[in-house]
Structures are given as structure tokens and as C-alpha cells.
Amino acid sequence: VFIANRDISGQQSRLHYKIHQPQLVFPRETLAATTMNGARADSPHFALLALALFSLFLAPSLAQTCKSYAFSDNRVYASCVDLPVLSSYLHWNYSQTSYVAEIAFRVTGATSSKWVSWAINPSGLKMVGSQALVAYQNSSGSMWAYTSPVDSLQTTLSPGTLSFGVPNISAVLENDEMTIFATLQLNSGTTTVNQVWQVGPVESGSPGTHSTSGANVQSTGTLDLLSGTTAASGGSGSSRLRRRNVHGVLNAVSWGTLMPMGALIARYLKVFQSADPAWFYLHVSCQASAYAVGVAGWATGLKLGSESSANNKVHGNIGLVLFVLGTLQGFALLLRPKKDHKYRLYWNMYHHTVGYTVIVLSIVNVFKGLDILDPEQKWRNTYIAVIATLGASAAVLEAITWYIVIKRKKTASSAPKISHSMNGDDGYRNGRV
Image 1 (cartoon, rainbow, N blue to C red):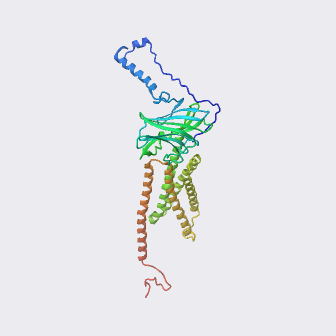
Image 2: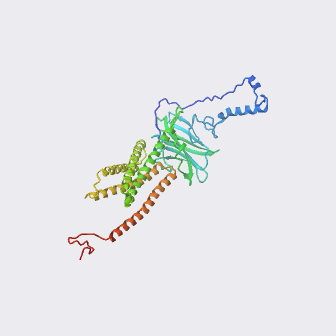
Image 3: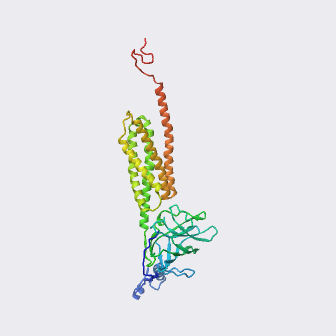
């Protein structure tokens, strides 16, 4: 979403550029005396040296910039800017009296297997809320350019109406460059906008998911339509992505992994008499560590949620419930009755119910977070592998511990019973005459 500023000057944007080319000046005496491995200035060696030096200074002047670019259909734009990432360029004319912008968005190195997009976002330097122009080559081989409002991180860039008018839009793919041409009827008073641009793959004849790292998360900035000045925000976008990644890792490790591990320790290790009371301290240590790390992850989530307009209420609400239930479990430990207390049974029921509820909600919320963060598939697969490993371990331990418990009961039932009656009979006719 772009930020609109007001200006009453009523002048059309015009930028004037003056390119200064570096000049080489060699005194004639120096040239005459210059040698290369004993060769003088008029030798072939010196000619090669001069050609190399000339090419070094000429190369920057030949490098493509928006200012040196000429459109094949003789379109002329008063302003342009070299966008900092994704090999992209923006050209435009803008009338402050009618608030009409004619734009050309170019991406070099484009192919028929890529889609390109340029957008204005009135609500901030982010993807959600962007009013996008999209183009790619469809299955019939023709270019398709259209408008698409982006209302979620899981957008498929479906066609739709933008918050401002787009009377004309078209696109071309030629010489490994894809260009979107469009006329925008912006809202009254607009002089500065938030711009977002993107490049992604075409999959099954429609736009696929673009990369979520590197240049693809740095492609935002502000644009002054009158002066032509821009301010890239790749750093802040990258910082936000890092915080989102930290939030995801903290919660996946704590609520999503350590909490289930602590439950496995409590359920299965206590069956082994040799593990008592070590299992209890391991269980408490694991759950306490999970809670501490989880609270840090929850806090980062609160901060991210306050900075985002995306609708992630379900994910956030589950996180809040987990924090409350985790806190209650901690306090419940302080109120744990002794084993022979009459209320111990009810405390155990509460503790187990809340504990298993936390585990289920934790796993569900980790997957909710993965859907929002939308990382590479390998990270989702990694977490699935972790949960599958814990589940398989639980199944094996369940069978082993049930076998131990049943065997122990059989052994106890077959052992001789010793009881003492008033006449000295122990129940097995011992002591009788």
C-alpha cells in the first residue's frame, strides 16, 4: 500500500540528467617514453594496453541504465529509476493536475517461464495490500497483463479491480526483457507512493510462488513521482523477515518439539524403576526450557502482529491460549499434592488434560505458522520428520512399557501372599497344626 502526500504546485514531473564521462589525459612526453616489457608507445604491446584501459573506462558508460534506454516503439518517459534489485527499471510520466501516471516497468533477463509484477501499496512497504500490475506469457504464447489486488500472503495473483483506476495495461516480452505498460488514475493529491515489485516462476500456466529470500524480500521502497527520488527499504524488509524466522524457529523448537519430548519422558521413563526420580527432573527441565523459549517466541509474535495488517488471528489466538495454559501448568506444579493425598487423582487428571491439549495445539500452530511464513518446502519437511520421529518413538515405547507393566502385574499376582491372622495363619496354611 502506498502513502499519498499532497502537493499543490500543479507541475508535471521532469528530470534532467547530465552524464559526466571520465577523460584520460596523457602528456605526450609520457606516452612517448612509456614502455611495456621494453616496447615503446608505437609497439603492438602498447596498443593492447591502451585498448584495455579504454575498455575499462568505456564499460561503465555502456552498462544499461534507465536513462540510456530507448523503447522500440519510441515511447518517451520524463522520469525513470534503476530499481536496486531484481534487474528492474521503472519509467514514468506523471501529471500532478490530473494525477495520471503513465508507467513502464521493465525486468531484464526475463523469460517466458517467469512472471513480473509492479505494485503500489497504500498501506505500507509490504506485499499484503499491494495493488499490483502483473504480466506473463500464457500457454498460447501471448502476453497477458492484468491487475491483481494482493490481500494475503498466500495470494495466487488472481485478476481483480484495484483501489485506483487502470484504463490501459499491456505487456511485451522481447530481447529477454519483459515490460508492463500501464496508465494509472491515482487518487487526488498523490505525489509519493510505496512501490513493491516482484519476479517469480510460471507454474502450470499461472504465477507460482516467488522466492522468499535474497532480492525477492528486498524489493520495496518509496517513490516520489514528482522529483523521481526513491528510497529502498530492503534492509527493513530483510530485518522483518529475520524476525519472522526467529519467531518460527523459537516456537517450533519450544512448543512444537520440546513440549512433546517432555511428555514422552514423563509417560514412559517413569515405568522403569531405575529411572525414578530422574524422569521427574528430566520432565520438569524439558518443560521449563520449552516454556522459557516459547515465551520468547510468543513475545516476538506479538511484536510482529502489531506491525502487520495481515489477518493471522487464528495463529495469534492459539499462541495466546498456549501461553496461558503453559503458565497454568507452571503454577499447578507448585500446588501438586502428595501421592497419597485424596486430591492427587484430580490434580493428575487436570495436569494430563492440559498437557496433552498444549501439545496438540502447539503442533497445529506450528503448521499454521509455516503456512504464514511460507518458507522453502524443506523446512516444513524437516518439522514433519521431527514429529513423525516423536510419534514413532511414542508408539514403540507404548508397546514396550505396556509389556513391562503387564509382566510386572503377572509376577506380582503369582507371588506367595503373606497375611497374619489372629491365630497365626498366614493364608497359606502355614502355621497350622
